[in-house]
Image 1 (cartoon, rainbow, N blue to C red):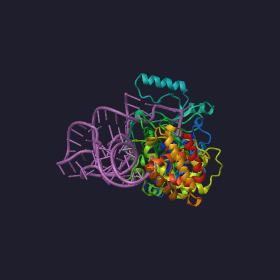
Image 2: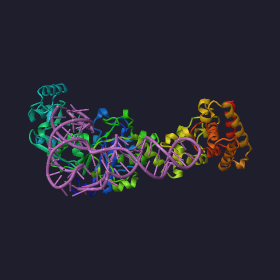
Image 3: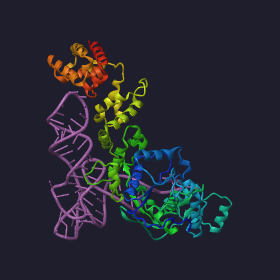
Length: 502
RNA sequence: GGCCCCAUCGUCUAACGGUCAGGACGCGAGGUUUUCAACCUCGAAAUCGGAGUUCGAUUCUCCGUGGGGUCACCA
């Protein structure tokens, strides 16, 4: 038997388990995929075990430049840490499958020697021909007896360099029973299985071979993956048996579904982890949310990283497939934004605004200004990217006065002249305030008094002032905003609005 | 279609045979309020259907229905 288990440890699902995340570097990880990584990590850590990252780059044609780095970046952003991996190594390395080819070849040699596998020289055309024929005869579509070549002949042809694959010789009869941690025993009739490919003609292993060889070699105790793998489970069970290896435990998680049904895809607004990061979601939000869909723990909705690290158990995940709830994700993000320490929020806001504010606004942004604005909007945004449209007026030297139909609502509709006159009075009064009195409470007092004087409700007057000063119908709290914008600019803007309305 | 998996409010979930079937998002009503949020109170909303087992089924069994996965030299 090639490459045995380096450790004869007796680990179990709940005693120093070893779990792995094995992405193939074909693109950015999406939420369903990364959830698998998060869960594996949480489970491993909960029980004092190890979390391993292994790159499954066995499909050369689908490999994508830089995908490996973006996968690791996604994990880091979420706060997922690994004990062994392609970047940091470990005693079971290498952690990149394309660097483990010899191991797979050794295993193939063993199987061939034991007559548990066979070389297959069939062309793709021949294979589709077989499938069509079987389908016409209402037989299982899998490839079984495609070529009848003696092992000697096969070895000769292979030695001569003839391209071929190596297939597993799946038993024709009997039943293969495999166990899923969440569903119990699942049995499959061997007659419905096929002679699946282990080694491709380019010398790379298929997932089936690589999974069995590596998860054994790396001493993985619990394999977690999506339920799309359940149908391949008997193949893996048979392979472990063929090598004489103990089978690991398996937990197949359900798929995350799109709101309309079906698999979640980009079309449904599903984004990669890094895209969520760019759009202003907080890592703690996504971490919490990923565990909220497909898992639950009593009445609890909010889970900190530490909560999850001490509560999560792979055995508690939900069997039914969950629908991705964008609304709840957004709500959750707002909740986490509000919970941020003031200074953390301020610095995060600053980074966001440096990105989102118009290019003509000089960088770096003024820290004191950011710090005074931050508390005004912290509880008003759901995404960090919501901030800019709420606060851009603080940086504009000049704001465009909205058209009358937007400016004049309710009480002021079709009463531009009155509005104009009112604003003129407001600007005059504000102008009388001394610089020392240009504070939130004094501005508020002045405007409330003036409203009373004019026989207006406070809201009626303030809606006018708000639009004039911020250019918006909806804004951060007005008095605070006015204090920050400063007397000169405020008065200037109100005068401008007044004349625009006259 | 074959094989396999799954099934509690619209959505995410809790209830390991006995609960007025709980919580969260969203939704509705009210309160608070300078806009918008936030916050507070209240409300509507579910065990897919049918047989069993049991004193008693959301929970166990079977059938049906519905949804999903898979049938590659992709993972």
